[in-house]
Length: 377
Image: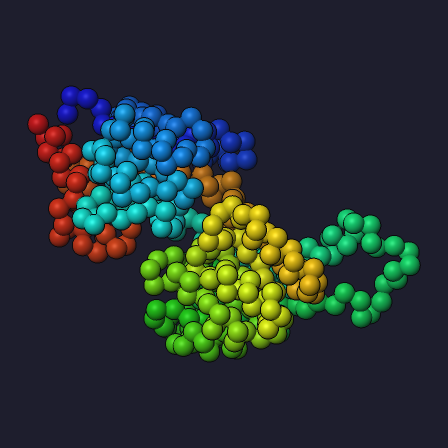
């Protein structure tokens, strides 16, 4: 190939993250080394801002005609975008990849960054559980708003909350993050119940106070805390609906640090608005992000009508640990470099190709084959 292969990044964040002062020196150095390596073998173009519109991405793809796109979950990569260039791969600096539409031929490789953020998301999940159980947000606002006055004396039965040690924690989706939550809370003697595609026998041997629930309804009936750790796909979208939500105990707690689309948010809001159920909740993700004003007003009205409902709304921040984000970019850049330096399927055995594609990686004709032919000329 006489000219360097072209790589297009949909944000300048990937190049700037390596200079972030909160990231450790070791990780920053590795990011810089990878960037230097990438620029030596590829013609790289970064969009100069953080969040390009779909029209802007399409325009850049037509003009630049890249072989690889680098993106994250705020950048929706449509199937139409994938047809207007020589694109053979999409790399996303995220564990989830539902922001990338799959073409009918499904011949464009997709890489992601799994196995990096499970610890920090588990920490974050636990912090949301604890903050909700102990009513941290409402009590902070109570002081902040000047409501704690000399007339309001301390008393034994004032502002009571509850500890986690006597709760049954239900985990929906026992993947890397769910397992990490169990690992971190298990030493407190907490009972766990979980639902997953299959039973985790090794996990149950290691943690005797964990029980598999084949029927998701049983988990929602029994758990005091339900924590969602599901990927978003055609099977899980709106899986948590009115039927399941109405099974939850009064004053139970629902946590979502997975993907907003796994919860039918309209069903949830309708239930709370009607007063048919009292469910406390801590959410980090939503079907549409950021939340629109109408949805925010619905949450506020619920709080006004039912002030004892504890709610925490966070701005999709669970993986926002500096070094975790840095590690995600390292995996992301390594995969892009691996794709560019490859000459056959065997060269991609260590790439973080999404599982659905990896299952039949050797049995399909991928668009990268054309790139390999050009490289051998």
